[in-house]
Length: 169
Length: 51
Image (cartoon, rainbow over all chains, first blue to last red; front, side, top):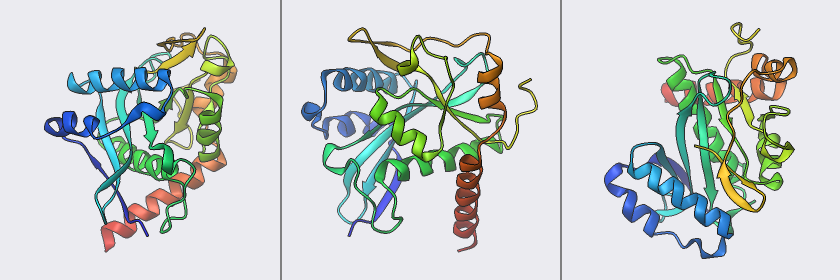
């Protein structure tokens, strides 16, 4: 049985961290996306957090987080990327009974709630790379911002941290 | 920075400007599902703090 944990990957560990993956099973677009994410992390433009099994230290996946004002200047945390190794996609953590991607999303919400106490950031945004992934986020609770992309496949999604945001009229 | 696959190429997601009424509604009010998830996670955080 896996015992999962999530922690931030320090700057000094980034190079080793990314080299530990074999992304060849992923599509060309995913591989290119990851190279952008990796490059940005080396320039302190996002922070990488890893999901791992602490019984054997195997990495299951990771996420890249940054901040954004791309949604009409309403500040938010941006989930730039969420990656689960192919063999763990759709798999459920035995302890939490949730999929690994949702475990990582739980962690992101936890971080966001901690940040929200000190910095006024009340939204979490992401743009799914395809519709299959959009369904995963939708199932979790993210909502499509309708018509926000050039087409429906590019719509931003949001998870709100306030019951109601009185500044958005 | 978020990216999307547009016309077969990986490109930057466009910035959203001038939100419509429907878009604002999604950002203004949390859904029941979001509120339930927030309650669940806040409870976990409290439990962890107490342990």
